[in-house]
Length: 484
Ligand code: SIN
Image (cartoon, rainbow, N blue to C red; front, side):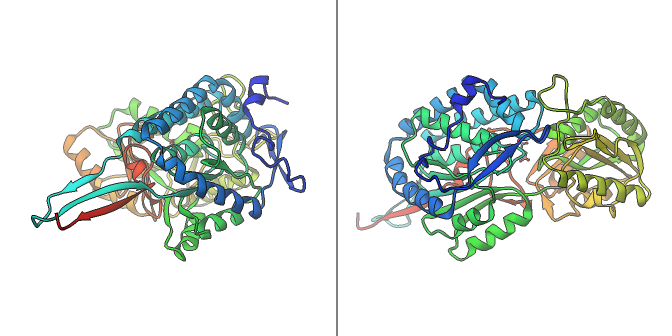
């Protein structure tokens, strides 16, 4: 077992989840994508367990919501402190099950803790509003109340920060949560859940459902009337299905879905800064992020120098198991991803693009892919119109501002966009014209607990982080006092 003693303490067993009396449960395996080694076998919880958990969450939520905000805040802060105290071991779990390099795991866990801290503070600032009444005998105001039981479904690419981003605001405002983490990466969620119990969340307030397949769990969460809200991060395809399932009961839903982020470099940009930004926006988490630069547009005057410098940097990226010091690119999550990357590269080459580096599977075992740069890419190539989700950088040449804005917006997605430029007038124009929920200007990274993360168009609805992230878990209630 790769786990250290303190980590084993941190990971709850099925007993800790309260299902010790369910010996008939099937199990599912969690394996390292780097080595294929078995990390854990976990209970595959069935619908009976899920329904009982939802019932319990509905009862617990009422008591939790009735507690003073300061009390909820204190428990959240303790949870944050426990995450920080265990960051070393938690990073090892995250890297083992997901594959990303250890420093990236550490950074993600600290980001997760930052969300918990942020919402521990925000819990005390859920303000109402008063309105000047149009007649003498009336007073009008609004209070905000927790929505109730929340069903949260989180992805494998950020198995810690996505949990914190959903669970922390929900718990802070007085909701209870039933969390279903991705089946590929449930271990760090399990550890975060255990730490939350240690921090003092009452029984039934924060619940974890482990399951080998998400479909049945997702359907139950969407159709069970005791669950009042769904928050999902994952593909647009699954988001669409969940939304359909929520329609029957008009259930509220927040969705953070796919993206195809344009990364635009204008002639007047600081070239070195743009290269740094592209490395972050494209190669962080081996390109497996929803906000990954999917289409890199470079203006004529800077194109050749950009391509040369980027390729030089990409060639130096070391690929391997995330536990190995110096590794920058870990494995893809599964063999299917490798197949997709290869098909994107081959399609581009067949249609006339030029391979500058990489382009193939890396090594003989594991699910590694060479960091890749392709130039002369056009919009009809798969790599420019599908979400690649891997370490492949397609370079597209453009001439004018209006042309690149049109190309950048020509997609069903609207999550993140990035651009590098210095002319102030152009910066404002482009920032306003891009149809994206988030725009990075002269930066390749913008995710923060302090800012609203989320997309337009088919990239989803709702926002996570900042005070707006709490609104998704609150109902507004208008109170009208008459006859005064
Ligand atoms: C993602 O949702 O894929 C990106 C998360 C992040 O950048 O923190």
